[in-house]
Image (cartoon, rainbow, N blue to C red):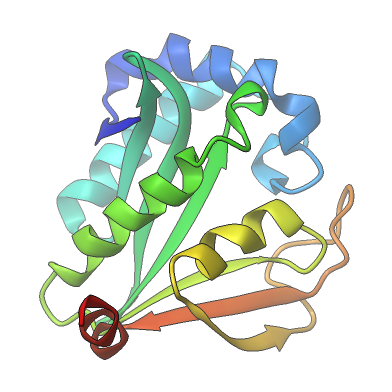
Length: 174
């Protein structure tokens, strides 16, 4: 598994990865609820490039053997806070890719000026997403109702918020 910055040239491959995984993604990802096409991918990739340049978000392709199998993004939510979001192709879940990708982006996030906290938010019913912060040593810091995103698919509408602080990273290194 390797990460790389997404580019506008990834539109077709990204579209294929998402459309092959729509059944898997729709219950959790509001952006996938109405399908996904190359126009949507191009818009996402253009906005991703703009966000990267402005320093507000840093989307990375998760690749295996050079092929895109998902996306992990570090999103600047406050001067000291970055939130991670991720999704994987249905055929690549359960292999540690999301955890490895999130671990790399935790390091990336803490290298940004002023960042002291990294959070991961997911719907309470999404057990697979909860495994990532658990394995990386995050602490559950709250549950939010109503959730930021609508309760669609299998979502129950309760956000679980996990956090890792810079000082927690130092204590884990000991």
